[in-house]
Image (cartoon, rainbow, N blue to C red; front, top):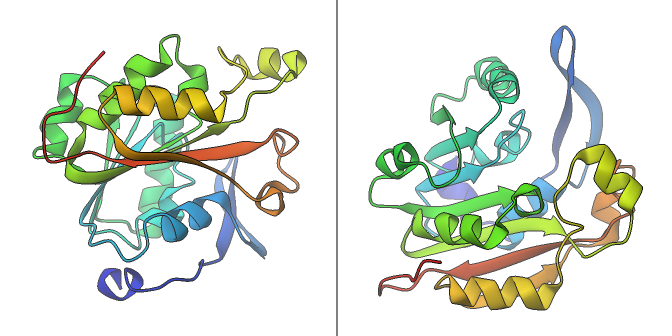
Length: 225
């Protein structure tokens, strides 16, 4: 399936899942998702074997990523969230997924990735980090030469009540500061794409704009901050 999927230009719709007290339940609603939009529209036509999912949470992205890529390393700093991700992996039978409880930048991640990942995805990770640009540089270092980073995060917003409820450190970011810091971390072709509002409809944070930073690690060494 992985070889065929890499040649597709369209977005794939998958069944949504939700975590309950009794485990992960599959819903029957099919809808375009942010995960699928990113996995296909930004990573399409790339020969991707190794993928790194930073901040995997309960593993929701894995339902779009694991069936497509040959090997997926997914990390989260929360043991509780990682336990839910492990349940999802077992339920789906994803034998190509490795789960790690760690912080981005830990030596264990570099050892697991080895020569680097072809694609690193980070969903709403930066706005939780006290030093987001240090985290961004660490994500870049996980890439192999020629590998691509996709970091999805909030646009800058003024909803302080939402930030406090979610324990967010930052109220999102401007596109320009994402691109500037991505270039400082060593990415080339750094650009930010605004995600269509239709993808966010019905989500608890759908009222806040989302955008995605993407860029490529060059063959030369990447600077760190």
